[in-house]
Image (cartoon, rainbow, N blue to C red; front, side, top):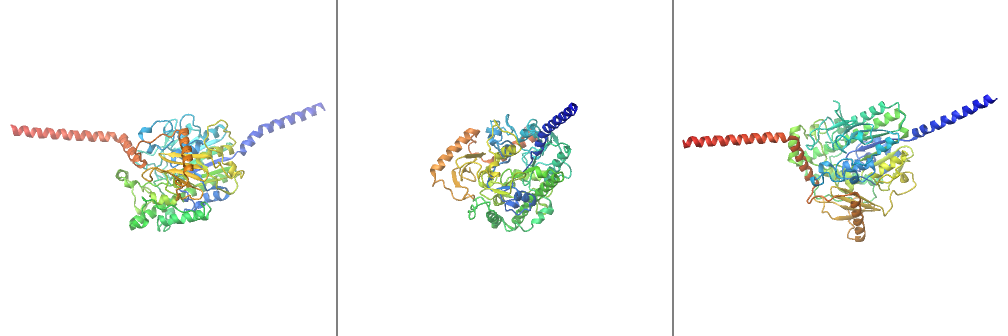
Length: 588
């Protein structure tokens, strides 16, 4: 009898121990996987769910079953946005006040302007890995180059990344003369691309390979897929490009008006909201000749085809997760780093010469394919933006981008509360059960709005500042204070009721001077808090790119100039010797 009781006691004790051991593992399995999908230079109205022409059914399905945000804001440029997305900090506090390609020499190496994640800056990947997550990244990094600045030093277990602002989508090739090569790194070591490379396909293939390699593990994972679509050079398979024949032939004014109407019909902007007039620097579609119209219409077809290709590979990744039974417990986030790219590089003679030297072309017959260089330019960029201006600026077209979150615990809904890029990290970390107590974070969790507990993410008196390369904004409640420097603006502060006027058409500064003064004061406090530094007198971001490219070319090819100078010197000395000899003969 005593023996039987002892056995029952031991059995009960073993069961309790087993439950105690199993409980943490079970809890760990319940923690969601996280897939963060970041597109590059995608405008607010580019995706199908936001009123665009591109066929993006996989992204649209995520939007239809999850939370689609109508007022999500990022920064005007890629590195600042990526730094904020991964850390929850303002870009100046990460070391990425701007991007290295437009950094003036006067600010190089200054605090906040180091162009690397500075000491003490902790990424979401590091926090998740410390909490037991497996962490992966494939695609564009652009947060530093070399030892200590790549993903393997910032919380990622496995990584295959491009460290530059962009690159060719068909081959391992630089896309602008600032770079000599397209540098890809795997787990911190220089790596090379496969022969059959296409960026969207490769980014997904590589992520699947990493997840397959770790398939035996039962830890949750964080997968960061940073696509090159639709950064210049815009490139896509011909089969997809031709699926948009005729769609853009009416020109940018027509497409912009149609998208504005569709965004209203979808409830993304207020019905009847006025659209901003055409900026004085923009060309009218009718001012282009027939050949120019053909190549610009085809460029937008490539743009749409590149979006469709990205969506197809996202769908392939979702199907892979479904095949492994992982999709149901995965949070998916889809967004863009900033608004659409306006650059028209062929206005610069240096760039045209570089294209000729490197074999890039801009011909209608192969536009978007291997060896072609495609851009959509400022007018199309503004048409895709769904607001004023575009990337590089603090206009709504530069800051307001798509944001979708779907997954366990996220109901189908439209979120109209204003959210910002630095809010993503605290939101996802909270859902992963990672505490941020005592951490320095500028963002706030969006989970109250996502769960329906709160209609807002920030209160009407809470201010959020934005600054990149002199383009500045401050949001407070329904109002936005914004400043656009020359040549696109006059550098004066303007005030808009952005809830009613997302097109930024009615400047209220003269009517509401007290609010302007209060918001300017808030903006000054923001600059002081995060360490915004003044730009040199006369700074122009586009001219700075040209200057920085020339300095890089000098750095790369100084020896060519040195040889050329030596040859010129030898020729001059030879001529001097020859002339002097002739004179000596005549004198004799």
